[in-house]
Image (cartoon, rainbow over all chains, first blue to last red; front, side, top):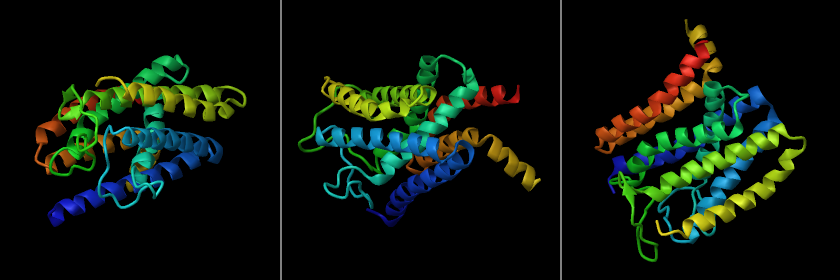
Length: 203
Length: 58
């Protein structure tokens, strides 16, 4: 691998960590430590959990990253979960701005998912395709895909829409309900179960 | 002017952040030799940014 590509790979990974730090500070100042902690921790747990599940089930792999979480087995980079956790509140606030914060939660969640997919339509093909290949969709022992879009399995875009939509729906419900945040642990397990089922479909 | 820009950035943080995501992804696509992919990305991100910006001005 050339030095330029290696630098770009490292920059992408470090960029994800910095992005999370910026969102953490901003959210902490505007929404308070409790809500921020809850939103980011939930986003990270859902994302990292689903990614671990996907790698474990042979849907994709993340070779040659600097930091993995958990460190052993080195399956999912820390930056992936943190980056995803940082994106979630961003699309949630934008949806509330577009539709109004009193809009139906389902409509807001659908818009959240659509925005995330809109971004992912360029991000995923650019980063997982040649020459960066920061994650791989095919390889030894991995499940082959049938349907592709822009060099990325359609499964990925559907997954982003479902995961972002479901997580934002659950977070909004939890924040609006008294002690609803206690349900977030259950939602996490539910999301993992649904994700595992979706991953078994013939994509 | 810098202070005004900073205040604007703080007020519209999520808007700028999402625009930053879109631009970064497009630049990255161009850097790896697929500028057309970046153009697609800008097209899929821009409508949301436009809507959010218009709503914010009301």
